[in-house]
Every structure is written in C-alpha cells, then in structure tokens.
Length: 277
Image 1 (tube, rainbow, N blue to C red):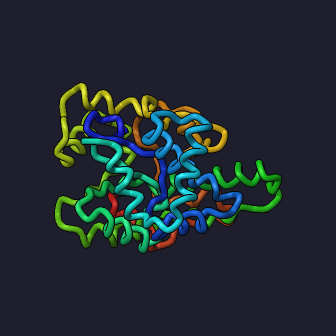
Image 2: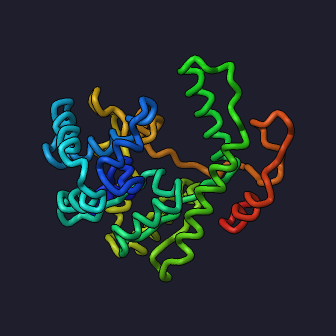
C-alpha cells in the first residue's frame, strides 16, 4: 500500500539485511526450500536494470548477483536506492525482524530510515501461520506429521519483541506503531496519518493510490526463474481487503492446540503493550 504512494517505491521482499554480503545472502538461502527468498531481490534488479521482469531479465539479474558475491549488502541496498530516482524506498521483508542482528544491520545501512511497526493480534497471526504450515506439509506429502502449534506463538513473541526493543531505542518520531487491524478497518484515516508522519503528500489522490496495492509492479507471480518475492496469497489476489477487526482475545484456549492451552504470560504482556486485549 505505501509503495503505491506517488513519492514512494515499494519493493518486494528483498531480504537485504540477513547477511553482510551478496555471497552471504546466497549462503543463507542455499537450501531448495529457501532459494525463493531471493526472488524478490532478483525481480527488483530485473525491473530497475531492464525495466521488465521477463525470464531473460531475471536471468541477467541472477548473473549480476553471482558476479558480485563480495559486494556488501550495504552497497547493494544503496545501489537499489540509486536506481529508483527521487522516490523513497519502502522495504518490508519479514526477515528484517527475525533476528535482532538483522535490525541492527538495517539501522547501520539506513540510520535515518523511518520504521513502521505494523502488528497483528497474536491469535490471528498464530492461527494463520499454523494453517500455512499445515498447507506446506500437505504439499510436501508430510501431512501425517503434526505441526508444533506452540511455535506460532513463540515466533510472534520473538519477532515483536525484537521490534519493540529496537524501536524503543530510536529517537522520538523515527518509529510508529500501528495495529494492522485498525488500518484495514479505516485505511483512509490511518494512511493519512502515516503520510503525515512520513512528510509526504496527504491529498486524496495520493491516499487513493495507496489503496490499490494490486497496481504494484510486483503484485503478480514473477517469471519462472523468480516467481515469488511477496506473500503467496497476496500474489494470487493482491486486492486490498478492508473490514472490521476480528473478534479475538488473549484469554480463550488456542483453537489450533489440542491440549486446551492458552497464550503464555510473556505473549499476553507484550500483546497488551501493543494495545490488544
């Protein structure tokens, strides 16, 4: 959504910040199940270098990266910035928050960046992630192996814990927290607030543009050699879906757990700090 603002350029998931060099990125995502995590970066380079995301352009981007394994991710990220002109870059890879070290690397590379902490209720997040894990196991023929439901909660707690500890060290105004549920319930109101915080256009035309994520250059399945780069469900149906927040809470038993367990106290405490009940 932000990337469709006339003054911003929304990237797919580039995963810039998980390593110090391009070679390090290839090492991090060397496994067959992880190679797709480079697709967003490849599509970005194909679009910026060749103005298209064809299979040939993507192959040239792959080769460009292979020839620069010693290039630092600092240099790589700023190369991308140099290619997008006057617009500001919007980078939203989930991996940014997977480890505290990744956020620290991001901050070293872009010390004046603005950080939007977009949260989702731990129940909604965990249930959705649990369903994704089940679908992945079914596609791989492993549906007889149970998914560890507790790991979904642990992931939510870890990621948002990293973000909170990181943003509380930033100067006032450099970060902003927003519940994603509120954004989807009233996008006009909150997109205008975000635009004001970013000091970019707040007029009706700019706000309307942000409500059309399907217009992004990266809102479709990519070429065969770089098909991903964004959330799969988004790529299959990139329209903005608005509506009231789901009726969920922190106290009921977790419906994906068979033992009737509930959220742990650390999860409840952090969720309440983020404004959830």
